[in-house]
Length: 180
Image 1 (cartoon, rainbow, N blue to C red):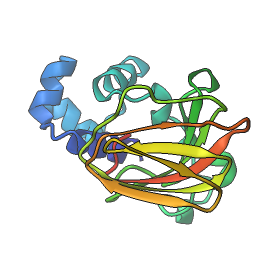
Image 2: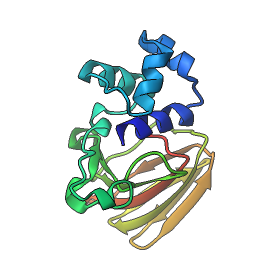
Image 3: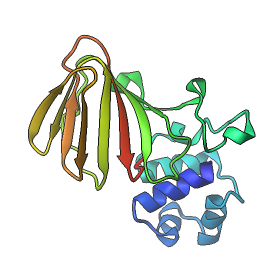
Image 4: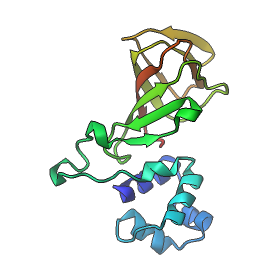
């Protein structure tokens, strides 16, 4: 799973093995072996990958699947990989088994008052469904207020969000291609 995630992150960012190897100070051969699951990176290497890809190092942990038949297929509620911290106002859990598919699915919990102040803009198609709470999202300069059960979708447009409510807002978010 780790090998698949590292490869998916590299490809999602349009980087070659040579570019990654140069940035990490490692050989292309070593990186290729890591992406094929033949070599295991150290904790220091995982930190370097996390910095390079702009993801939390915690993304690379939690791959343990007790039932082999479930590997890459099922994600049990108690075994989701968490991204972010409650300090940031946004905690996300990866609902997809890994990052190797054509999309990723996240459970995003936005703390009351949390907001993304600077618009994000990524080359992705994104959709979401508000499970609970209130959630405001600005897509391409237009603000939309969502209530439980509402959903949204946009493609390659700048966006930002905020939780104007007094309780957490929970959004199931789908992103294609995967960016984490």
